[in-house]
Length: 234
Length: 286
Image 1: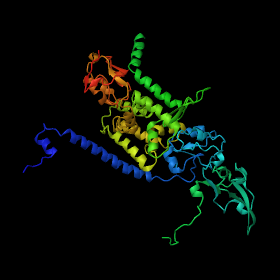
Image 2 (image 1 turned 45 degrees about the vertical axis):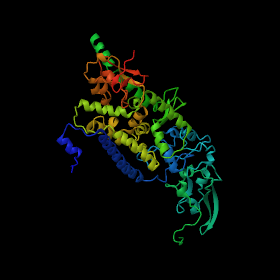
Image 3 (image 1 turned 135 degrees about the vertical axis):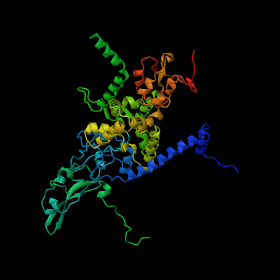
Image 4 (image 1 turned 60 degrees about the vertical axis):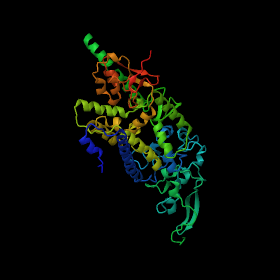
């Protein structure tokens, strides 16, 4: 019976016999594939374990839905440069958004809703949708009156600054009377179909922390329909 | 006095490629940040995608490839920009990007220079093919995660963003990169790890701008060129007189060998011939 000799044994017994080329190549290829697969798994875990985009991070007008935006935006900053009001910034590692993607924070500096939408025109990849030609159709988020406790209008005053500063005044946000135990209140009410999420209302809210805030639409709005939870739908 | 002048001239001459290269690198960095009076800024955006002279779009084909793999739709401007860039590097040679355009090259070469000056010997040996592995990983990860995987750490655009907005968050990474090249691994980043370099290497496999041994007889075989080369293996066939041109696409066309070589044996040439050497044996043309 012949005894199989491994390449290593062969190398010690007969140092003049080299390992076959094909075997060397296979070894190399598989070693690299191993590194690539292992690295990919680890890096994928690292990417997925990142904190999600924070609610205060708003995308420029015309931005595709967040997932598609993340894949389509190439982080070049041409929109940032073309914004005449310098509201946009590219995310650094300190910002709660994918590195290098453009965003603005409404409370700091809201979108001024330029009618010619220069940021969209600057985008080379269509991450800011070039089909958006009417800034009133933009959807950067939706304003939500999140705090009914501190909003001055809920206290019976007529601050209404959010209504007065709205660039689509009377349509996107208007005062609706509500009768309650405090009397007749004029409540700022957002029409989500008209609100572009520019953030002007949030910026100008007189409270030290805004009572009205622009949220990404999926956070700011419910969706009608039945929730199966607890209703025994199998 | 004349002696000093002569020494200066010869000093400049022996650094001519380095000086031209550094000038271009710095000009490219400045083009994105400096407003020229009356003219304005000549480049907008950053090295992943930019608009030059208000009209010419340029897009990094590697970034666009990640984006497309992550599931992005095709867009005209980005494709035109990437075609221009890819066409240029495919014709002339991919890794020209590494030594003539990429700002990180200045950082890593500074680290290398300091390493030489301080005679730091310690070296973590890495495989030069690690960058290809990282390239494959970056592309696979873009498909898997739907984000631009390499752009989460890419120090090239990170450098530009830090410069433009003077935010300090990414400086730590750039400093780590510098220290890695300085203290840990000789030419570790650009020569072994960076997948952008690996991408451009593949893109410019058949690049026509090549280091050519014009007068192979003049070569004294001192192999000084190999000592200064950031990718020394590319010059080996030349010094061993087995080839007339550097055909290995790892060559960054940095010109360090041309600066170093006193014999005039080497030159940078547009080489339009196919198959100048066959299996290492130069084909002599009459």
